[in-house]
Amino acid sequence: MRTSVIIAVSAFAAFASCKKIDKLTEFDMPYETSVTIPSSVGMQVPFTFPTPDVASHAEETFSVNDTRKDKIEEIHLTELRLSISKPANGDFSFLKDVELYLAADGLSDQKVAWKFNIPANPGNTLYLETTDADLQAFVKKDTFKIKVDVVTDEVITQDYTIQVNAKFHVNARVLGI
Image (cartoon, rainbow, N blue to C red; front, side, top):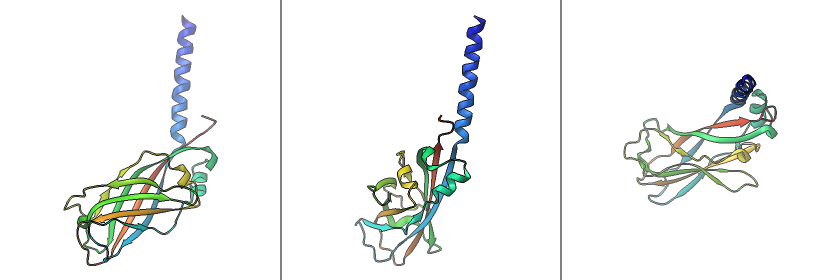
């Protein structure tokens, strides 16, 4: 009986230690880019606006967090925020729908975030719904693009510059766990 208790306590302690170690191998990777929506965009018609290449800096970030590309188990997008930087008094009331995709050489585009039926008074910041797909194939590349698809429900009379802030959560293996 005493042996069973010792084994059970030891197993629990080992499991708890593994969970603590596993948490030490998780970290967030922020990315920021911008996209400009020109004033010439028509209403109720989908338009796609690619961002410039986003340097992933994955190797650097992995190294700072004591891991390597080959030790990554999964990478998920946990937050995607859009903020209007120009015009200063701009808001997202001109948008009906917005979808964001990741694109990279050799990979099919992946829809990663969206917001449909944007309300009439959304303000100058939007938080989008995010996919729970594993996105490590994109983030491990040297560069990737974020494509922004929009449908507007108002004519805009000036260009809008939108900051795209993404936060990816990385889970890496340690000690083969």
